[in-house]
Each structure stands twice: as C-alpha cells, then as structure tokens.
Length: 343
Picture 1: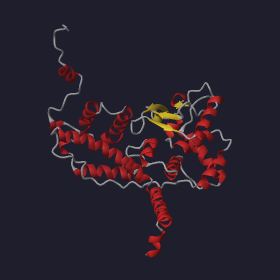
Picture 2: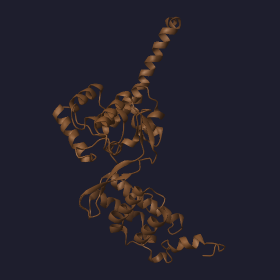
Picture 3: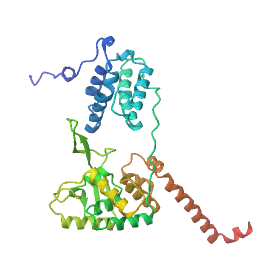
C-alpha cells in the first residue's frame, strides 16, 4: 500500500469478521451465538471466553440451536431451564449454579441481539431459575484452629494449610504461589495469577493452566511475621523450585491432593468436617475480630466490593457490633458516673 494512501480500517475489520445476518428469517440461535461469541466477546478474559464457548457448545446449541432466533419464546427458554434441572437429555441434572451460568451466557447473547434490533424482546428475561443453596460457612473456632494446627504438624502440606489460614488465599492462588510473588524485604506476597483446572479437549482427564484472578486485579497481601517465617524456612529448604508448595518431584500440588489430604487429617484428628475454603473464611473472621477494617479485608481477599465482604461475614460483624455496645457502656460508666446514678 502506498504510504499516502489511507488504510480503510473498518473495511478490513469487516472482511475478517463473520458477517451480520442478512435474512433474519433463517437465522438460528446457533448462528447468532457463533456471531456473538466471535464478534462481541473479544474483550473478555481468555478463561471467560472459553467458559462462554463451552456453555454454548455443550448446553445451548444441543437444545436451542436449531430454533430460529426470531421465534425463540419465553416458554422455550423456561423449558430449557427446566430440562437442565431435571437432567433431560444429559447424563445428570445440572446444579442450580451451573444452570444460572448457562442462563447468563444465553441472556448476554440475546441482549446483544435485542440491542441490534434483531429481536424485539429478550426471551431469557423472565424465566424462573432454580434457587442456589448457600453453603454454610464453617469458621473454625480458636480451639479448632489450635487442634487443626496440632493435627497438621509434620505433614507434607502443613505449611500450605498454614499460609492459607494466615493469608486467606483462594485454593488456586495458594497452589499457584511462586517465589517471584514473595517480597521478603517488605513482608508481602503479590497475587497476580492462579492455577486453574481444565478438562482436556479429548474429554478425558484434566490439566492445569495459568489463569487471571477472580476480579482480574492483582493485590499485595502483607503477612504477619509468623507467616513470613514459614516462607523463609521453605525458601531455605527449596531454593530451586518455581512453586512455593511442591511435591517431592518439584511439581505443584493439585486440588484433589490438597482436598484428600485435608479430609484424612480431619478424620484422623476427630475435627468436625470443613472445606479447604473454610480456612479462608476463618482467616477473614480472625482478621475482623483482630480489628482489621472491612476495606483492607476486602482488598486482601480479592473481593469486588466491601459490601460483598460485609454480606459474607455479616455474622462476624454482628458480634463486633455487640462488643462495641459493651465498650460504649464501659466508657459511660467509667467517665459519666454521676449522670448514671442520677437516672
């Protein structure tokens, strides 16, 4: 191209982009989802894109794919939701959370079609989704924390569990923790990625790959001196490894290995059962009770908003509010005794 000739960017982009539907009467849900995924989802994270792609291929297309886009109704989408809940045409019923995710992708795709006037309304708008049961948070009491720490003493995953308890890291974050994340001079770890399990394309087995964080924002977590001493000890023992927590062959731990080991420890020690994620909840609760403010805790946990952190740990803040009333009462009695006696 001549340097003085103006390059037509828009024409070029149109040439490499799937064409918009010309005859909407023949445009199916499959065709629209393919167009939406390839054109409208280029800006999302790679992991999000793959999730959308998988949901479209494995759930939406097999049931709704042949339906004409303009003929898709509220009832069609509701029946689709019901079929996933009942397990019709699939190996087993899907969980309410998975159904919500499938509906979310379908709703996004159809919203774009509505914005572009390809359909008059979004047929995924008014459907009724199965309610998602909230897993009860199991926060370990201080006596349970002490018992757990005694139970893991000398275990090959002892330090992984302790760092999780002292930092609140998610499982993929702590498994994927590498030495470049740790600043020993200033006493913090930088969390900027996590290890994610993926099913192999063959459908058999799984593999691990690096993925972005849940809120897509890196964060620095300043650790207590005890936690930093643990990491210093590990560094002295394992200088050549990329990962902080490793098997004897230098490979990182897997989610299954961490889960199975935890359950054996719990069974052997007689502790009431809890999930690995409950170590994160325990950290958050201990931090609040120690006086860490909500905004700092939100940042450390990697939550989107402080309001979400408050919603999750409202049980703890209720206790703190009760304690605050006791402190105010003590202040009144100690500083305003004459007023109190006159009442």
